[in-house]
Length: 366
Image (cartoon, rainbow, N blue to C red):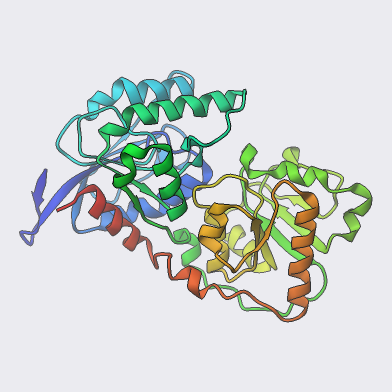
């Protein structure tokens, strides 16, 4: 659908679907992206379909023409999601382009673009007999069934582009890569000045309590050897009751931090420690590079795709490998070393307007 603005410029209508976005990382991303999409002069946002929980449920649209609609779920989320993607999605039939932020294509007849943010859809994942394992297996099947209904897919890294193409060869030619910068609240701050490091390290690991965030690795810290770790404090954004190793004095669970608290935490840190075993992007890695911080992260493809040669890598299944990586960082800082993220930052958009422009060009091609 085409709309004329006051300058007789043709603008395309666009619908946004984010009814299943409630996770911390995905929510933070959309809180930065949605305003940029609405400000773009190429499109008129006609409908924004919001989740019934989390910060996005209270999102206030900028365009007065946009109609915000809450998608209420009355069944368990997993069952509701299956029905939404396979049955109720017919309500989105139409000629107006649809940009879906819920990872799974909808079974509808519309010019549909799907933003994929989770690595759990990759078929080369080993199946685990668990509730989550079964849930992800079902989602992969739905993705495979519904993939033909999407005109395009957007991922955040070339790693995810290649991995998704291997998992679903029929969509390989439809996958586009659009990276994202740090969240708006962090872009508004300035990278902290470099301070010569002295003594043990102050580290931070911003993460929710998902299994793939790999907090359990910290349980392997030897109680008798904990004092030998060159760490003064490791702040983890988990509630105290979810502390992975309560007897390790230098691990501090600080709970979910506000934006200003996160900026201060980054400013006080000597580096980011990232433990996650499974990511499509790893936004804290981008945040740390923007804040000009050293990074310790797993020796895994997603991390290499973002950090290149600039990070200190470790085996995410080995506590000894983590100890070695932390010791390397402390030794480097004591000798005046500091990372240079110039090359890595060139691959990251400078602002969210660039991200919005790229996504709109994919979702609403001329």
